[in-house]
Length: 204
Image (tube, rainbow, N blue to C red):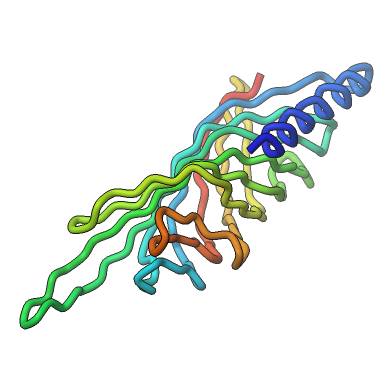
């Protein structure tokens, strides 16, 4: 956890130093906003009961700072929730088990603008908190590190009043060794996720 905090602090320090060195050439720009994330495709997800994830939903708070006319550093806070449903057979009865898994993380990614409309974004996410719960099992909580990597390309438009709208397909990859463990026999790994981000922000 100390290494994660040090990495993020160092990134912001580099951003500020670089931004100051470029201040004679460009105006400093900041953007704050929110985004929602909807699930469209997932594979190689793992849970302790070997059931695949069927859907997910995410919500995030965004902050970005321009480093130059093309580059920006982006961070914030994001919560993602994953769902699965399976049938548990008990003697002659079948019980439908509905489970959910949540993770909270901090992105530290860089964005490159090809134009005022098209951009690409990539970098790591440091997910540090998680929970698991279902309609029949006890709830579990976990504080650890689940590293993921983001790659997205999208469209954005900034209006004259500073309001910005964005739309981007988003690829999120969680390495095979990265599992958020809640107990000895209960863990979760999202795997490979392809989803869509919808965002709104204010540029100042």
